[in-house]
Length: 81
Image (tube, one colour):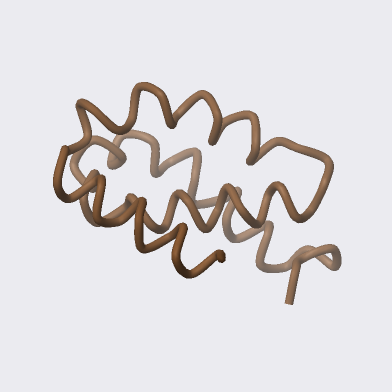
């Protein structure tokens, strides 16, 4: 299910572009990335990665915030294997 969901987000971001994908997705990603449940954070990181290629230029301004967060998640003992 995760693989198909990620593939769908990837295809949608490539097909419709960031102006159509990011406005509804960013609020959900912000909420999910800050969620206390590790599985919700993992799903949000997966979704972010799935749209990254199709929305790379529009996501670039968010990288200074995202980079430290993602590194922290990698080192977290709660990280989903």
